[in-house]
Image (tube, rainbow, N blue to C red; front, side):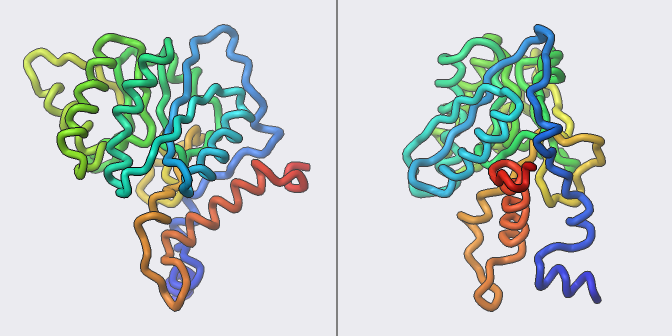
Length: 258
């Protein structure tokens, strides 16, 4: 009964509270010495004059603490969340042409807990993504190597999204990769990222992990969930806002950093 009341009023169940990772304080977020290991560019995009501008500032601050280079590209909104998301592969095609070396794409509502490059630099693949326990690909975090096959995949993904702008971009990518893997001669070398690189902050079926590297804060909830409960935001939105406040106290509040 108590858990039901807490979930109804505060938005959090006991299980959701349990899976939320600690966000590293300033003393644990110093840029790591990489000892010459390969690194790349973190890339993201956001729609101008939207809540995603604020998301971008948080992402940049979390990356700055770790010494990570980020290129966050502004785009004009299409007026639809799904259509905006379908611009992702087109942005990545442009980023691939702009930057040399591997790319790490993250949705702009992400924050970095730790430097991901020491692990990512060891991957021998064209693309790597996290897959949910039921098998669905999440395009919120993508490792894209600097290979001809990866560039070809981005072009194919962008074309497929342009032809089907109302289809979720990650479903399009999942279908392309599944079709390629099932072919007699696959063109793309695929790898799977652990959940620590695509951690949705309140997802209760996340596999256990010792350390989170990239956390996603689900800004889409603000854009797509409009219903209210006695004038209050729905529970999923309240959880997100709670988590954002907790992280921003560490990232931006000088008193919290002392």
